[in-house]
Amino acid sequence: MLDVIYDGDCPFCRFCRRWAESRTPSGRLNWIARPESPSQALDNEGFRLSCECDSLVVTDGRQFWVKSRAIFRLAAELRPPWHVLALFRFLPLSLTDALYDQVAKRRKG
Image 1 (cartoon, rainbow, N blue to C red):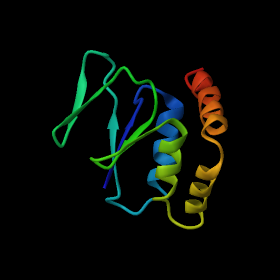
Image 2: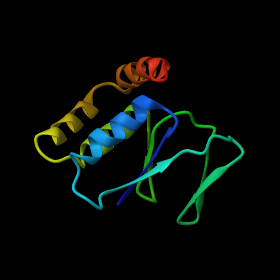
Image 3: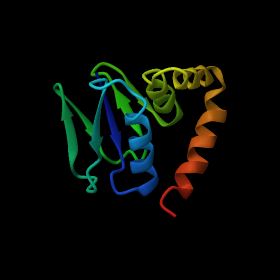
Image 4: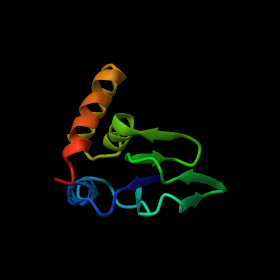
């Protein structure tokens, strides 16, 4: 199971959550709304993640994926044909994270 830490106050993020949930086998993803206060932290299996990170975060308890890599990790869990979106992980990280950052700038607008 993957933990998916997202901005629960963001309408776009909530839409993406609903979209992914409807295309993912049940029990594969545990959605966690990130606390608003940067002083709060999430405790998961004995490790802590600072909430100062303003990005989507996906973790399996051993590894963390952020920004576009988190999107691609989530895509790998989607039902066919949507799981093929994970193949975009082979694009340069600088390109995919730049695209992620552009969407993130506009997501609450």
